[in-house]
Length: 318
Image 1 (cartoon, rainbow, N blue to C red):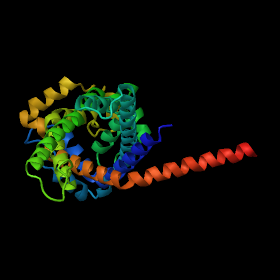
Image 2 (cartoon, rainbow, N blue to C red; image 1 turned 180 degrees about the horizontal axis):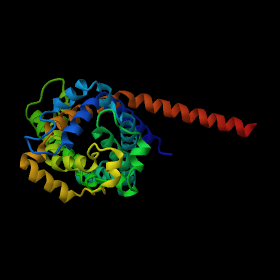
Image 3 (cartoon, helix red, strand yellow; image 1 turned 180 degrees about the vertical axis):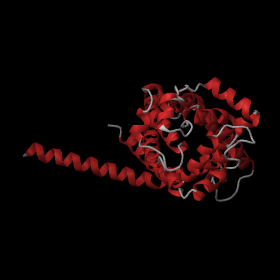
Image 4 (cartoon, one colour; image 1 turned 90 degrees about the horizontal axis):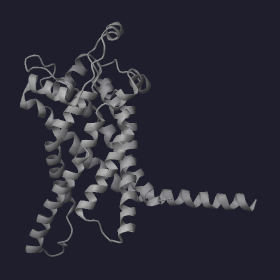
């Protein structure tokens, strides 16, 4: 059993769980704002804050947390699968290649492979959470009912874009690596006493991480919004109306065309500021929490392994 991969996956999943819960109201507002596609004079939400004020005016503030359980489940599983997959692929690569380190290209391929596995494994949960968030306040349904409303293929709405968006961390890593090399080169040109030119400070790493994530988000944002719109819940109709009207399947070309006709080029970047704010804060919280609990997680896993080993020995002796 690969305990190191399990430790990385567990700490990453716990960090994701906590960061998702803390930022969930912002995520709900962002998702509802992104899913609203209408002409400017007919838009339900003109600003991100309009979603929040709607929840307050309708006395549905707690509805900002609708779908939280599903989102946490999806977030926990996705981060566990991603960190485990990446750690596992990395170990296999090092063993087969005989290298002591991984180059940039190989790292990007491993990250993309782990991301693809994650997208496929958690797509139904991702679709369900988006539908719950975009359902009218106070009318959200449970996970099972949300998934079983349509066909099995409906649960995988947006899978193609999800696989495409595995390029997001690849872009982020590439930008981060390039910026890191420039910063370290400047440190080597101007060495300071008491600091190593080969390592970034915590603050520098945070800033570079935020900048690189922002660049990756901007470049892939049209695909991000298209994915939200494909997965979003339909109009708020009663059950009889829904049964009488056949469901129109959303496609990538159709969604992009809808944005273009109703909102123009700016529509492809509607909600970008909210996406950047949520993504940067979430990434920062995730990494911070993961680093804080990774050592504790490793110790607990070793303790559990030792306990199981001793228990098995006693059973055999008995």
